[in-house]
Length: 418
Ligand SMILES: NC(=O)c1ccc[n+]([C@@H]2O[C@H](COP(=O)([O-])OP(=O)(O)OC[C@H]3O[C@@H](n4cnc5c(N)ncnc54)[C@H](O)[C@@H]3O)[C@@H](O)[C@H]2O)c1
Ligand SMILES: N[C@@H](CCSC[C@H]1O[C@@H](n2cnc3c(=O)[nH]cnc32)[C@H](O)[C@@H]1O)C(=O)O
Image 1 (cartoon, helix red, strand yellow):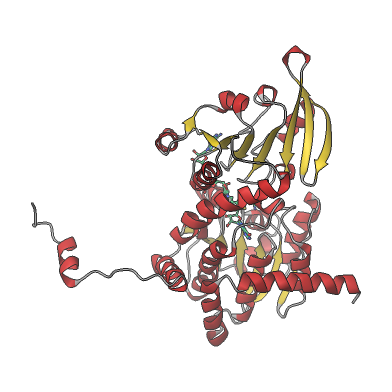
Image 2 (cartoon, protein in one colour; image 1 turned 120 degrees about the vertical axis):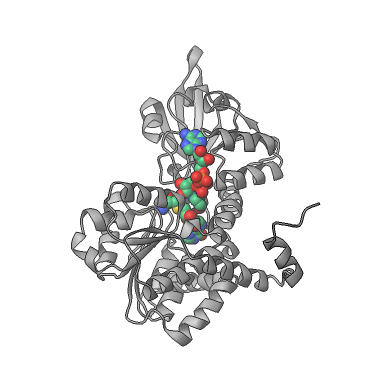
């Protein structure tokens, strides 16, 4: 093996070790998996962000007895050193590569499916999509899959509605110990980490426009306010818009926000949240980032078409110049080609948060292996959620109260009044 490859593997292993040391819940699961081998003989095909925390999950599944093959779930989120380190480990193969083309991305998913999996793990449902469209011969062998993210579950629910989903899937995103922490505090921190390290600019004193006030949007807005920005929220859901206003932010349509924002962060799972109608209204120098889904939230095709020129002005920042009213020129800076800024221009979520998301994944896979599930989207059992929360609290040295017998009776009773 050449020296530079060896160096890469060492660098990947260091990252994995660091992450592992900050994922205590997964550590506990790994110990149990090592003793009990609940995944013995199972073949698992995964498409996830290939970086250090994911590697800890992959190792955990392999220690549990599974053969694991993994590809990426985003062309720009793979960390090549981690991918190489993973590929060297027992019972694991990894075929992910940073900055792959769309064709290479789907070829890698194909390769992963060649292990003829009985369990899948997806982040965005691309692997399940390929399975149902092009690798249908493999479907009868599949006993179930797990889905990591909100939009993946939306895609699967749409498949289920049309009667097109031919396997069982656990909605890992919808576990409370996933979305309440990963989507909110994880994205809240890592999106800003990605934006700040990429731009090296100040957030304080700026106007930040957050597109979408769901679990991710709440986190991104909260941290932007904490950094000293004025926060503006755009929404299409009246309840969420009201919540954003009562949380202290200004709420308005993107058509109005476009003119006042310095930094825009989309996180809706939807397409064209920022589109050709909005670009010409923007301040020159505006910064656009996406922390939602794929590369569709900012209409990049539209921006390219109206652009007079584009150039890379700093690593992971592309500047587009467009014409505006009065012959003015507006420069618009798009981070990480409009792909997830926290992963394509950062290291993703903090390890302590992925600890809970991936504990749900590992226990979800074990649940699938040990239970016969009907085709369709299933909830993660509440016991798994509570177990993950209890273990996380324990790892943080936090104790909580328990109901006394009197309290239990009181809460079950309907006769006691004022
Ligand atoms: N960057 C990450 O690491 C990360 C982490 C978790 C989830 N995600 C992704 O982020 C996206 C959001 O996830 P979530 O859990 O917050 O979902 P969510 O459903 O809780 O929130 C999405 C919000 O966007 C709003 N919305 C939809 N279309 C809109 C539009 N055109 N303009 C303004 N608002 C609009 C919805 O009303 C909703 O309130 C999903 O695609 C999810 O897969 C990314
Ligand atoms: N694959 C699609 C879908 C969004 S990924 C969003 C998911 O990434 C997950 N995620 C965020 N940070 C990390 C990380 O550091 N490692 C692995 N997964 C992560 C998180 O759980 C979230 O649900 C895309 O890339 O556009």
